[in-house]
Picture 1 (spheres, rainbow, N blue to C red):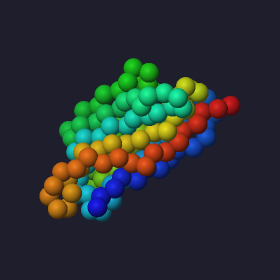
Picture 2: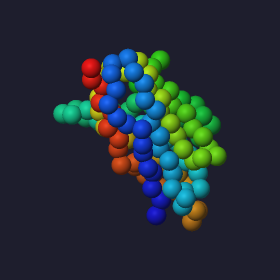
Picture 3: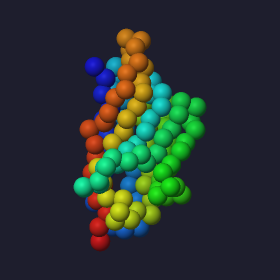
Length: 120
């Protein structure tokens, strides 16, 4: 069964940067489209960034110009570069991808989440 494995979260000071990764397991042939979400304590999950199969990207207004979503198809990995971080960016970040499995079927998978904390 395929899975997405996230990494890269941590504690960073305001103005700092982090790069989150979402890597597909070997049983996943390709990542089609992927969305990064985040959920802050006491708040609903919100969409942060989206990348399509052809590389088209979209961002939430609150992160546009500061976050960049990208993909490395050879590594079957999608990244979220976070820059100029603010305390309000503190949240658990989740990746969600439509993937093609080695079996030939399509599936929608979620990563386990990675915590980003922005604090002095």
